[in-house]
Length: 166
Image 1 (spheres, rainbow, N blue to C red):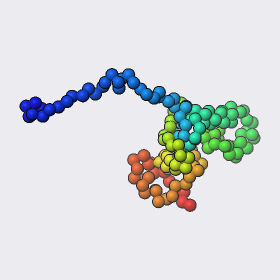
Image 2: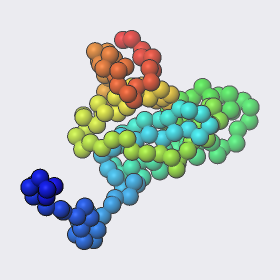
Image 3: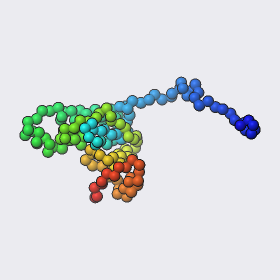
Image 4: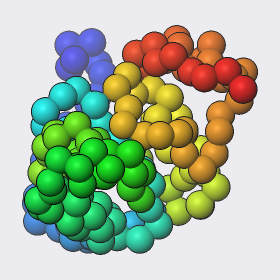
């Protein structure tokens, strides 16, 4: 650059400040609040999408406790048949107990964060819509209009899940 009379100031990419100073501690996944999350099944390709304003670890523990309370019971054939007709609090629990599948708790991830509750419900609905294999019984607390179908169909995350027509 000097031979063309262009002055250049070289700045180091890594400085001592960038290596040593971290103003915020990294937050553990279980401590994150106001999020949309995904819990996959270990036995199949399906996943459960949910949202919470509380700590993610607290909500995950509630799901886990409910699933374990149902799946740990021993039933007679008659009791098993009647339990299959019952609908549990969570679709995740139904999947584990009715289909005898195992939930992959360690692979649970946070998909999105949003402090505004109504916006978080919309994000949950979008993630439900994008998911190919959803365990959810419904689209969540917010139902997306079918006007978004074309947009979601062209999105790179969308896998073509069939929507119920209202």
